Length: 218
Image 1: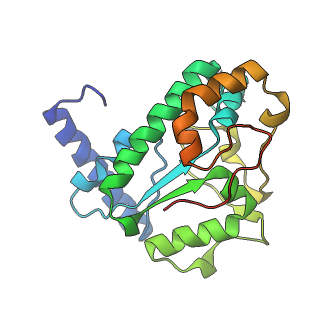
Image 2 (image 1 turned 90 degrees about the vertical axis):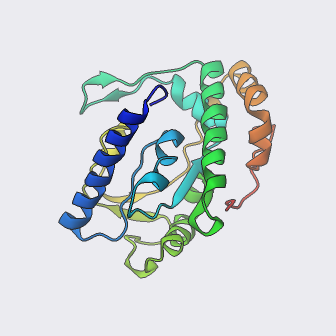
């Protein structure tokens, strides 16, 4: 979408708006979640007539992201190996995407946007999900939570992402912190150096042996 022209943009917005309207008419859902990962996609929502957009910026420690991106993972559905990145490329992309997300966030009213850290979510999913339902004006009593950190997942329609997106049933959430034990010192410091400014802004410690400060930014 970086080189999209005005005609292409108008056509894209028309298709996107029609898709959301069809989803609403078919399901009756008042809230539709678009999990697209590019901030440039979210930046277009205010151009779609009849759509009230809420922006959820999900961030994770860049060193965890870097480590995850170096691991080979196969997608059994797509029958392919997921793309990997080295620590430098991963850190640059993390910094760029989160900077773009912050730019989009600033364009949303304060009561229609929120920043959530992955680490806070897995530590207390009930609290975080309740904050999201409050954000969009939904009743948190209908949440599929089975205890403090267990959620019941049904069928979803996620087209791309981690292979674990197809898991169903009762899932106990826990932080994936393998990177703190297995990531090389060199990879860790490359990632830290590149992402330092945003790393500190989101409350992550420069030393990965320290615990991140708790709390989502909104």
